Length: 178
Image 1 (tube, one colour):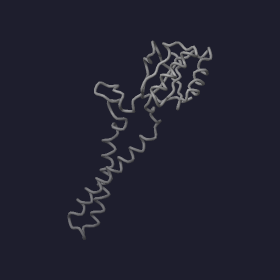
Image 2: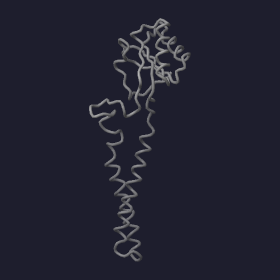
Image 3: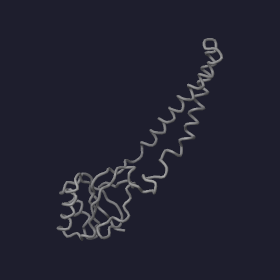
Image 4: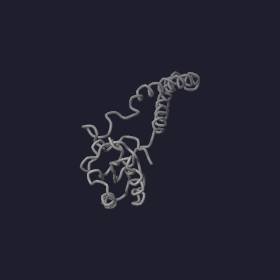
């Protein structure tokens, strides 16, 4: 595994020019690569398409919805029971149904907030990556060259670039920005 310095660029032409700049600066051609990183969810990592076999929040969905429904139904039924003089015998039933519905919706919003607090995904777009030898000072040179060429974001990773191909690139990994 080598240290890899990768930069994000807007245009393919720019990425190709950056690759040439790295080669002109003495970096081996087989250790420099450029590629398009797809948007999250479109990497076709699994055979059926997409990035994951199961959505990150899907595991907790049935339990969370059931909890919200039961809580909401109990509160709604109690409110409906108090309304028996006005609504008649349908008060507790309607109150329970409305409460279960509202409770399930509330549990969805609570789950959404939990899942949004994680690290942001890697943005899509053109990337240029170069494998560097840290002990030879190539890392600092690569970072400086990325900045000079206008990289929007620069990240550091560990991996293997062979023959101009980043063999073990994981689009789902959390970027470690420089």
